[in-house]
Length: 200
Image (cartoon, rainbow, N blue to C red; front, side):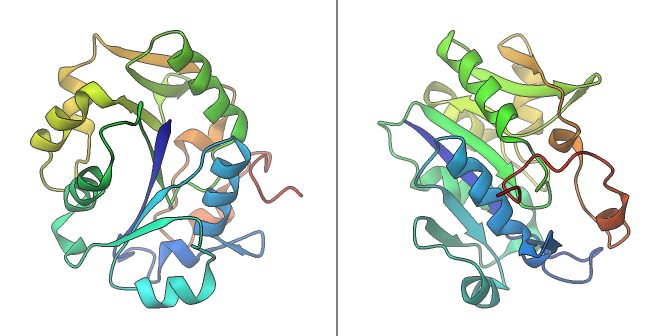
């Protein structure tokens, strides 16, 4: 079993509002991310929320998720990742990390990563037009080292840099895997085909 983790605890300073509740085709961004990973066959996601947890719970169906609240999101992504890793069972194959400000990741990208994992990849990430994207897969064997490497707002970046020889980059035709939303203007900048779970 691969345990998905969705990071949604960011302060949204540049956005000026909760990124988890950004309107993506008339749905909250967190709902879009969850629908996409569910459609790809993932289940039981860990969702890390921050100070706006109450508002998010009121707007997003989290009944099929394990919710963790990061009381100190201002300390950076590493704190959210460490909390999530502490909740991951030792019996899982590994984790797949998602970010709520990247709601346009395609279901096909997740399935492409599954194929790499089935072939033995222990670290895997999509790559689109030469740029590494998300989600990123970390095998169970690396989770302890990953947790120990975390600091500030870098998340798993430093770990991936030091384990580049193990990282399998999976080519995908998905601009959504490299498109993140930081500012209100980014909401109108997306020009890709909307392939994610908003398509019913």
